[in-house]
Image 1 (spheres, rainbow, N blue to C red):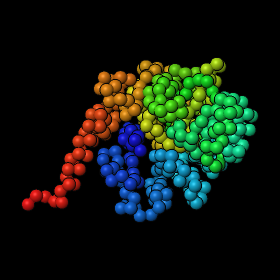
Image 2 (image 1 turned 90 degrees about the vertical axis):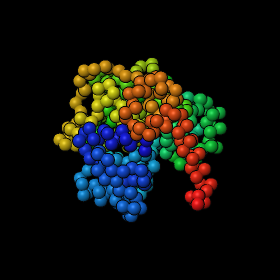
Image 3 (image 1 turned 180 degrees about the horizontal axis):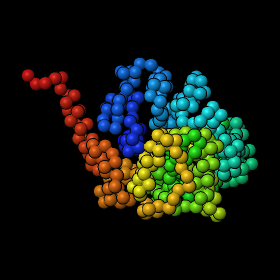
Image 4 (image 1 turned 135 degrees about the vertical axis):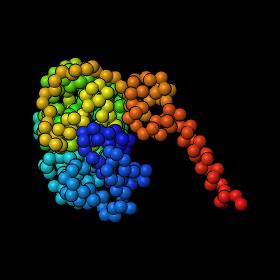
Amino acid sequence: MPHLHSLVRLFHRAGVPCDFLTTNPRLLPTGPVRRTLRRGVDVDEDWMAAALRWREGHGGRVVLGDDGLLTAVRDSALPPEDQCRLLGITGPGHLDHVGSKAGLAEALARGGVAQPRFRVARGASDAAAACAAVGYPVVVKVDRSAGGDGVFVCRSSADADALAGRLPPGRLLVQEWVDGETIDLSGFFGAGRPVHFVHAEFLETVGGPHAPSKRRRYTHPGALGPEVFDAVAGMAAALGLDGFANLTAMRRRDDGALLFIEADLRPNVWVEMSRHMGDDPAPSIGAWLERGETMARPRPPDGPATLEIAYLFRLRPRDAWLNRHGAWRQFADHDPWRVVCFLAGGRINGWARSVARRFRRHDGPAR
């Protein structure tokens, strides 16, 4: 969970104490972290049961840190109402889009949310027919792919036929290829309404066009037209969002249409990055948790309308040293030891491993 410290800081600024249920022995209570419950040490029961019991006792919210936890909840035998309490959605009617790209496309279609043309294939044997129905070029997505894995581009029927033998069993989502910019619209939502969201254009990714972003250009939502807010609000209602959601859209180049393509019910490593341009999500989250206030159409910004920034740990150490893409802004945002190790280019970690190997060569202290 690389965004852990950012998430803790965000909740601390919002005036919300954090408790953690974790397997990480290094995650200790601090000022913002009230308690750390270690699985197998402080908590012996199933982690889902422990999280639900904590939520019932504290009246708080459960935030899951990665896609694996989301999938585990969705595949569990928990009653649908309990799954919703852990996943951050308003009711069982929205469970079908959790962890499923095909389910997401179908939910957006029911809600009238703009998205690329699509077909859902039952399996690899139907993939070529679905591709032909959408029209080439297309993007083929494994139903539970993540981080760019399981996403393929087919530009012809020959590509589709060649891909069929490599696809795993299960449903597939086939979408039209959209020529345009990738836009992050992630944020925090309450009862199907936006509480705070960002608008960040992907400028550079790490490992391919469908991979996580490395460098972004943020634009304050108040500097955009009302259609962006309306689009995000429509998606939040269609999916029943009630917590953090990692949303991605494409802005089509020829007509500027905003088409939604992804929704993961978790925060990402950029969860508080917009505060560097004066658009801190913490006050909005605090107002929702305390008074149930959601977001009205955003006002024009008081400060800069745009900010270009890269995620520190996806840069080369040399670029960070030279403050490229605003890297220095983030030095105080992360664990100091992790920042030092990163700036050293792995030399510190290598030195520590070398010392440990030398120590292990001895059976014990010299006599």
